[in-house]
Length: 307
Image (cartoon, rainbow, N blue to C red; front, side, top):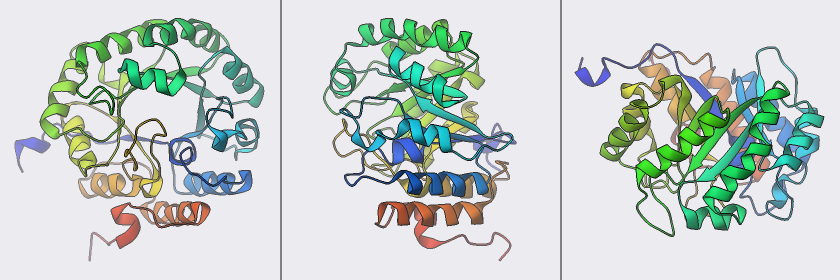
């Protein structure tokens, strides 16, 4: 076997983001009951880390106006950790009241994208997190940090990866246990991913770095494979390839969870996810949004590797 695969892990943790990142950009309002149905199907498939909503203002993301209800009503199962994004102290108050176990904070490596996304500069956003991260940790919640547009910005173009690293280090210093690096518009290529991830892992433990890849240009799986070879052990994904960013034009489509799990299982990498049930969860997601989803395995079906 090629040396390319010598360092791939025995197991990978998949962080499912479809109930939040997958649904937030849908034009038609998805009823709470349908969101809960999707979450139930994801849990049944074996997913144990699921980002279910975001405690943002409904004025910014109307699709997530039911965040409090979703977080309160998700099916509680042993070993399943639900998370939600929290942009500010008010969001944290809502998260604590809902019983959520983990929160996420988010900032962009691009000033322009950050201004369009949260109407704040990057520095102001990081300063604001001092009223979110430390209090959350003190209250017993784990906090995950997201850095968007690390591979490139729809407004500014190329982003200096050293700036993204500085932001990630600040999030770690404030108390985030893991930083998820986002290719928000899906422009990353394997060579770029290799250089970027290697730089991050030279400064941070691999357990503290995750990849959040969009498949806008069809390179998400290739970039994921590069990350695995370098030491990444956590990958974000969205069932069926559902999702996109409302402040990143043309960035439709997260890495499809089925495509990722199919590749991982075919390489002998464990996920504790049932691929057949995951495919069924993708069909639930498709019914929830009322349109065909772009994931390759979602469309083609699950082929038996023993056939």
